[in-house]
Length: 589
Ligand code: ARG
Image (cartoon, rainbow, N blue to C red; front, side, top):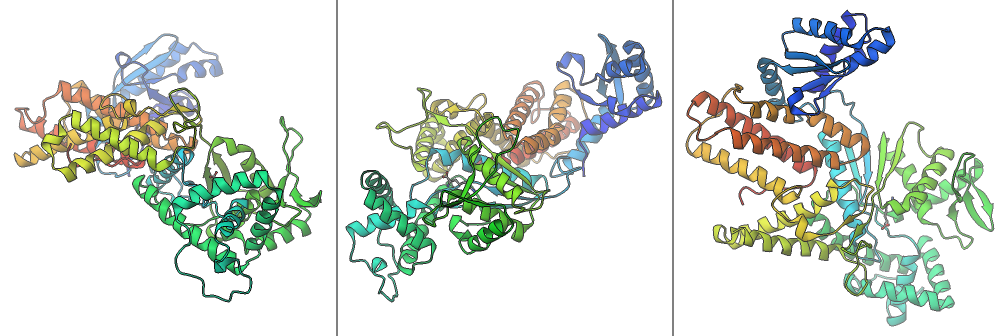
């Protein structure tokens, strides 16, 4: 397995510090800020000088003298108050490239201790079609899942359906109003219940808002819905049967969206799956003194002395007996702990739910619902805004459905690929396939390339451009390399050992060598934007290489073969990173 170039070189430079009786940790090197400064720089002499009370320039020069003995470096210089600049020799750069070429993770897995990571994302609800908020949860969550897989972790991805609260009771009662004759409402009915759902997903989208506003005007209806929720949770068979229909049609509907977005869930669990566990949990929390009764409700106090803002208690059970969003989340933690023994649970959910997760995590720790060592994290994200800077809405002020966003992106992509002249080149089916990939890549890259917590403006025209920091552009860069490699094959030009001639080739290898830091940084901060930056820098470096160096047209067969190898490995890395970002690259476009 390859090891990160920066780690390897830092160790070597650290050894030089050590020979001078200085702390080897000071040998840490970084890529030089500007290319004219060389490839790498080390600033450790400055800190070493403070520690040893010596002149930093003298230390820098002594380190350089040591490094001269190590055959890997060249062009060693000192500058400023004691910076050390250096290049790698072509031999060591080539050797590193060969290591990278042999390792599917490009050195990213090195030093990673495999963990079990549960990712909770997607989070659709039975009562409401997936909307723009679920777009980010799905895109970011899926890319973090893929990143963790890439780094060698075991991942479990759970969609955590919202299927167990008051919205269920509201829907049951709303359906009863218009169809009181259905057997689901007759307590004396002994079954069997019908096989097909009495309502469609589209009807649910109408029924839920209707029920929700009715409950605000009609306290009796609200009371009935509360009771229905409680009875459902207690297992009333007719309600359970109706609920199952609603869940099944919702799952089928969301699967279409998740397939379009390439999201992969290993578990299709929901809030309701905790129902059987909740009584035991409530009992343990009460018996062990973690919960208490307050105004008839069962709560867990979670405030801490140094809280800066108010931290309300987590409500486990309301006075009417119904359990809450927090109760099912707490029970889910216990079930995950029992079943999977995870090292980490990541919740990729809208930042506006941060209070909820803080309460749940604190309650879980207080009530010892899981081992202390398990890392719980709410991976929040900002909102998607319209061009007016306010959260994205439909023209009449409604919630934007996820499906319509994807559809819009694909139609914008159709326009763009047509304008690029692809309609003349490809048949209808291939063209549509390309447009779908371009549309999905556009929204994904736009979403992931932003800092997760910031809001961004949904601007399809900008997202679908074939230039700059866009998904379609990164994808196009990969397609171009693919087509070049195909041509090489057609002309029976083979790949061969890498030999370095031009600076653009060296820079390309250095860009490829940056993946371990990018992938680890992205995983540590749950920040896919770091990988977006990496792949963008890589495609830029490839463009410079392609501009400066002939590949197919190169006369010298050994140089040509070397460049074809560089192209093939670059393609492999671009595709690997785009795969983590959830972007599929077509064969041609
Ligand atoms: N269904 C929730 C929503 O739409 C998201 C669920 C997130 N996951 C969780 N374990 N609470 O807001």
